[in-house]
Length: 304
Ligand SMILES: [Zn+2]
Image (tube, rainbow, N blue to C red; front, side, top):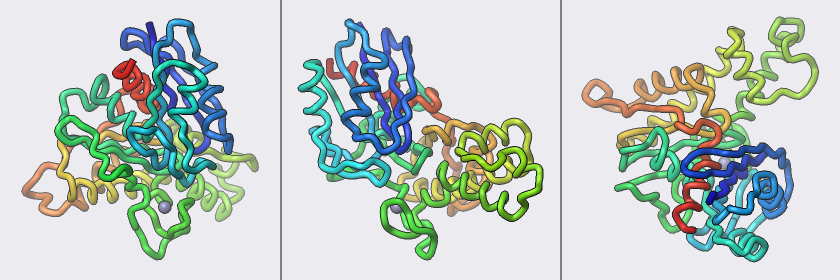
């Protein structure tokens, strides 16, 4: 018996099949601009097996719980979509649909960095920033959409965000923010070694973090700059929630120390009363970049 978990982000989907707590199959699907129902069905087919008992979906954006209606998202081109009911009609097995960060938090508490923690925050870092709040072991939802801190007004006079507002946190701490910094370096010094490393083609956040991991000093500096913005935002969250732990996941968030080292330093620096309190640990998600998909599969196992 197994369950399927899918994480639908702004530019790609990841699907896993989980059996006895182990990922037995995993697929990436590029899905730029595809309708979420088509993306979900293709991702399910990719890892399908006849013993699948339930399907869980995490999707970036505003999801009404428990109905599993995708209300709106800045990176997904669909609104008020009853995704859970549509998938259930297609598959005729139990389906659960939640926000991508919420399913990641669920999975990280079952089997990940947050095991044993009842009060923690999860920050996903990819095309944008997502978030989940866990209080007394339960996801806190507010009316429905709590934890959308990617759109905290980090700098009111800052850049225009994909959500249509200005200066949101995710405009300076996300994959696209890292790519923008890289492009600025290249345009300032088109003959430099950094420009030559990337050539004239498209650049992804993963390309820049891979260059940082390979020891490129310019790339390390750019990743550290995004890490600093991540840390400043996390300090604000710590001031509000005083959590026991902050877990960072998502494609960019799973990079590791080149990003989280600066994030930890800037979070500790920005936190008030810093000499009289401990900043909570800031850890990479145990399931790394696949925390959303794995969490969705665990959530599916809980409803089958
Ligand atoms: Zn925004």
